[in-house]
Each structure stands twice: as C-alpha cells, then as structure tokens.
Length: 325
Image (cartoon, rainbow, N blue to C red; front, side):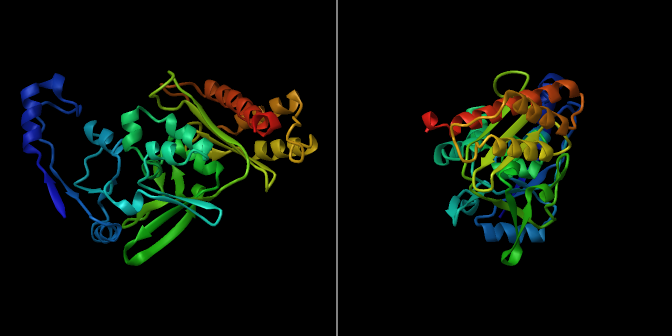
C-alpha cells in the first residue's frame, strides 16, 4: 500500500508563516518535493516492497529520520513505515540467547527485560518518555551513529545483527562488521534490519554516559562494561569517542588478568588493588579516538572514558559481592 505526502500544502503553510515559522531551514517560499510512503501490513510484504524499491528509507519510531527531514538534511522520495509490523516488535529467549526485534521500543525493553541491566540503563538514558515510546534499537542500528546509546551495549554483548530480504533470506553479521563508519552500516539495498541476537552472559554489567546535561542529551562519551563469568572475561565498549562504537580490547585483557590474579572469578568477595583499577581505566581512555566538537573536546572525552571505566568496573565488583545478592 502506498500513501502520498503532498508538497503543496506544506509549501503554502511555510509561505504563510514566513521565515520564522519555517522549520526546514530553507527559504520560506520553497515548495518542497513530495514523497510517497509504503505501508506494508506484514514483514513478508515489507521485504517484497524493499526488494522492488530498494531506495525506500525504512522508518520505525522516526526519532532520527524525521529530524533529518525536518532539518532538510535528507529528502528521500520514498519512505517505508515499518512501525506497524508485529514481527519486528517482539523479543524472545532462545537456547541461552536473546533475540530482540528491530521494532522493540526502549520503553518495552525497560518494562519487559529488567534482567538485561545494561540495555535497560541505556534505554532509560534515551531522550524523553515520548522518544522512548517511539525509538527502537533497530533505529539505532539503522542510523549507526557512534552516539547511539544502545550500540555500546550490543557491542559489549557480542551481538549479531540479523538482516532479512525477500524470499525468506536472512543473514547475521557481527556488530563490528555491521557498523562500518559514521552513520554507515552494512545493510544492502533491499534488506531490512530484523533484529539483534546475543548469548546472555552470566555476570553483572552496566551502561553509563556523560552529556552536557543530566537528561535528554546526546552522549559526549558512553561506556558499557560487561563481565562474563563463564568466559572469565571483561568486555568494554565505547560510544561517541570514535567514528563508530569500539571495544577497548587491551583494557579488557588487562582487566580480566587483574581479576584472575586477585581470585575474583572464584571468590565473589575479592577485589583488585586500586592501582590495577586505575591501570584498567587508563587503558580504556587510551582506546578512545575522539574529536573536538561542539559537545566536548577530545581531551575531555578521554577523561570521561577514564572516569566511566573506573566506576563501571568498581560497580561490577560490588555487584558480585555476597551482600549485593
């Protein structure tokens, strides 16, 4: 099904309001090009439409796409509304793994997945309640911004991104293969993001970020730390400090070794020496590849990573202690 969004009414409204009312940033007498919206009723129909019209831009919550449209940063001729597809708005546990549909909202995650601590914390940090009611992890993956709050969590969970195409074809890509650069990903024309899948680790985890204010803010630096008791590993993923989300692999190895030497893996009450915690935090900061921009300097972002890493590992060790159980 197709719906037509006409340009003329919008153009007339812009002319009537004048420059002050023109939210697009264009001249007040600009008659913007119209566009069509595809309205599939099922995932199979959506995949068929994507194959027939690979130029169509998928829209779920619209919290990224509609900003681009309103600011005239993008003007696609064809959109596809996937927000009504029940197949994408589901999640399930399967053989020690979680599959999270691309259309699951942040509010739904907070309500239905309380045990996924880091993902819930990241979801809670996203925008306002209205944004959390609309925004989706699939949208974060599609936009592929290094500031996407859910992305460091998926990286720390070693998640795979599931892509679908017409004819029932699917493929899964590791998160670091899917995310290819600043707002770039490996989704091919004709494909849709179906969801993400990861093995559920046994161990505490957290997400934290620093912004220019306490709420409704784009991250200046974000960090997810996840302990995996079975693998005896420490995973640390960073957002907003590189062209895409990255893992601090050297810090991970040093942190896991420090926990091993201190007997933490076998004794929940054990801890590591303060100097080892500082060394871990310093290695996390050195993994960052930040830039200076309007939200913060590269120096500040590295400092933020150091502070977030120190706090996150300390929190994880506290969470393992018997009194925290």
